[in-house]
Image 1 (cartoon, one colour):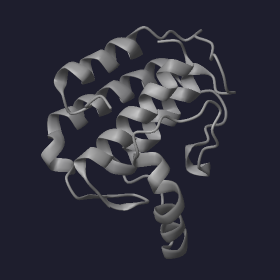
Image 2: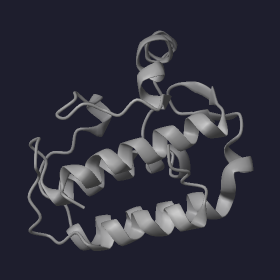
Image 3: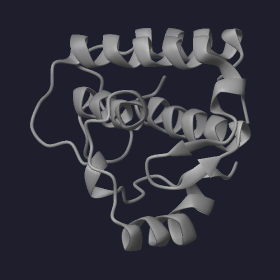
Amino acid sequence: MNNIFDLKETNKLIERIDKLDAYAKPQWGKMSVDQMLAHCNVTYEMIYDNKHPKPNAFKKWMLKAIVKPYVVSEKPYKKSSRTAPEFVISGSKNFVEEKAKLIDYLNKTQNLGEAYFENKPSHSFGKLTAKEWNNLFYKHLDHHLCQFGV
């Protein structure tokens, strides 16, 4: 798994994001490119913006037991995998704003660095290691950039 905390890897992801345009079409799935960017931003909003409600104790237990192993492992996501309701984006979004926001989040994450994320609690899964955070960040973004051919 590539290391999102390595500046070179973050820059490669940003280069891929910069190759997207508002007319990019997915190779699979139903999201438009603006929705995909907004969808990817949800991960970072849960960390930095506290704009999504935290799951109740039962839901958090279920997420930790069932979803976490899939999300933080190095095993790639399958095409057209289901997503959590919090990540479903409906309607159109501003492509330029969502793209800029995602790049800002990537830069912020990279600047905070690996040590910041070691044992940092996630919104839904409890404490994660820096490696688990890396897998969560990189795998999700790589999956969706591949979805749009970049």
